Length: 93
Image 1 (cartoon, rainbow, N blue to C red):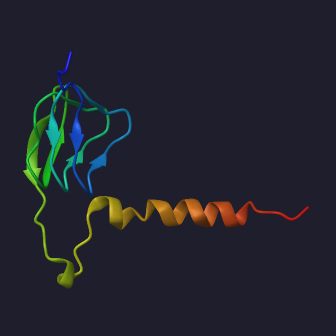
Image 2 (cartoon, rainbow, N blue to C red):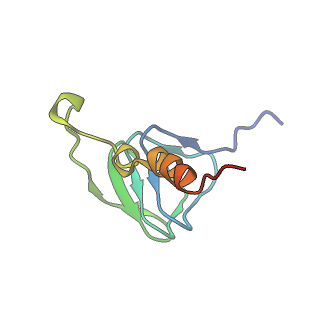
Image 3 (spheres, one colour):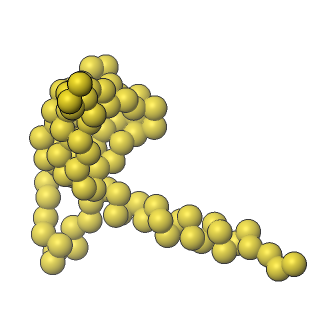
């Protein structure tokens, strides 16, 4: 009762397919989590982590927006791909 048990996911986080984030953990901004990983501890900003349980294997060097830096989620342009797919499959009745 009143216990927070949910993960907190930051901005620009990339979570690989089949990964799990369990418990009251904080995934900071710009983190990349490898496919199939199990995250059960907090992950610092711009870290790259993989494994079961997930371990940090590196840190992504973050530039400024003026220098053209994009987070992994922005670089993949996921929302743009969905819109293009919708337009290609659109038809008139």
